[in-house]
Picture 1 (cartoon, one colour):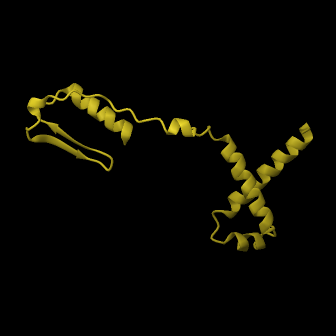
Picture 2 (cartoon, rainbow, N blue to C red; picture 1 turned 180 degrees about the vertical axis):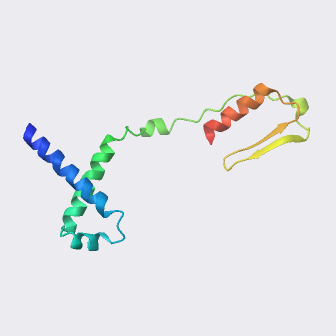
Picture 3 (cartoon, rainbow, N blue to C red; picture 1 turned 90 degrees about the vertical axis):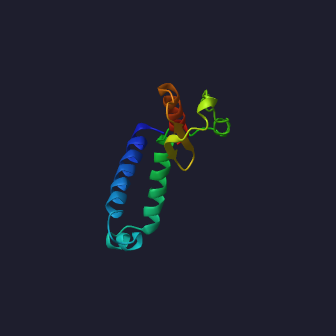
Length: 121
């Protein structure tokens, strides 16, 4: 594609971006707005599709299916069994996890639990 064609295409894209920005906040339907502004509805949707496609192409690459299927790794925590039956000093209930922290739990253990929660929530 030569330079003039590239400039022309960029100009058209910017022009239609502005048209679409003008239409979207209006209280009118696209059909009504296009009729009022003497714009073909078919052209509006054609350019909307082109603009969305160009925007998607500029997004960072999505994770591949292989990356998404990797197993989740959890932090390994050492638990002191002697504190197992003590009453919990703190209880945290989240949609994905629940944590109970017993009185006397070490700062390091609490930090490790919170870091693990941060990674799954």
